[in-house]
Length: 256
Image (cartoon, rainbow, N blue to C red; front, side):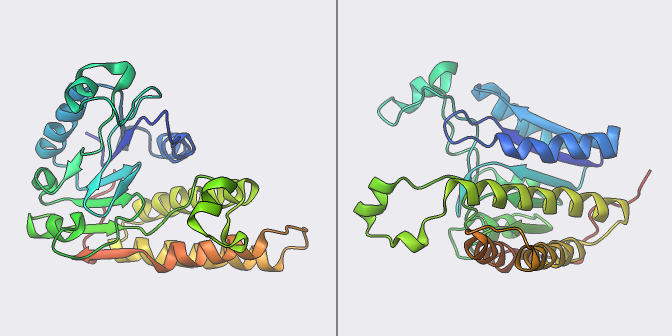
């Protein structure tokens, strides 16, 4: 059995394709100790995934996808629409959309595990948050992240929302930012697994590596007019990581 399991929903609307670089890197480095469960546009697959997680003895579960403070999203097809009924979306792959995949009701499936939620806005700690309810339902440790901007805000909605143009995260800057955070996460996960770190050790390493990447950008002689906003976003990235539960849990019990 693998020592690390990743859950990776497919998203054809708001692409999470860049996250696959974590999967390919760790598969190459860890071989049979790594398993990535890629979910397609099927309710059966999503239900089976939760059942599978509830039965395996593997301790560290990595979620890679979209979400919010109280739930993590499943797969989303390119043709899905908010105007289609939930029942229709469940049974039609071309319009499938699951925005209630991992939630307060089924989080107990992760009991006795570490859930590392690499997902936007999973860093809340209140009575309705997934993180707090995970710990209350027996999850040993929950790691959540803040806002991870990976999509460009078009000029029109920016005007409607009255956002300053200084706050816009340009496409080119987003591409650099995504490349950096993927590099940080995949390398820190590998080092932490190989050296049998605790969850806190992993999080500390992520923060250290983020600081290094920020410093590299600041000191770089390359002319990048978006340097400041990328550095600011990286600062937010590492500052907004939340750890709930026992941060001294080892990621894996024993290494092969």
